[in-house]
Length: 162
Image 1 (cartoon, rainbow, N blue to C red):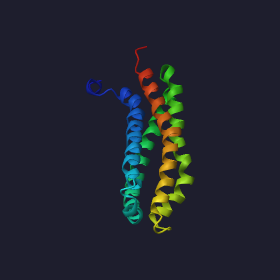
Image 2: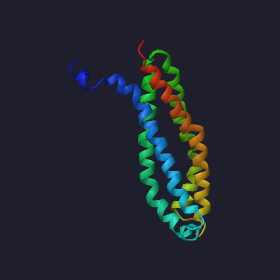
Image 3: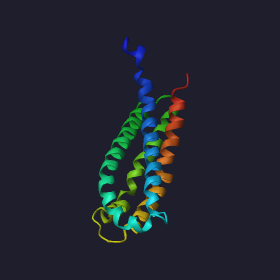
């Protein structure tokens, strides 16, 4: 096929979950870095009133990115699992399961996000932001990082010559 001269779609399929999981993990680290700045002592007083409006504008775009990235990870991870490429299919299955686990934290995070975006506790934006960041860190360590590790192993294993 002439099209495979330039693009090997099998390689794209094998690498897609890793690329999207890498982007999601990077975005997660950026969220922590940027949002944690509001909690630093030199910004804390001003942040109390700024955090709710900032989060209200920040969160919808961030959610769209996360849904897209995890949608790609889950769908291509599942496709790779069903394709069963050599010994790597177990790693694709595990990576996909961890990517799905990202959303298991949604029930705990939804109330904090609503509190932040609706400014339910005026002058307590930092407290709510700290709650969100705490859940975010736990989720990143328990779901996002393991998904990424599994997709690294899956991709490297699946692209090895047979």
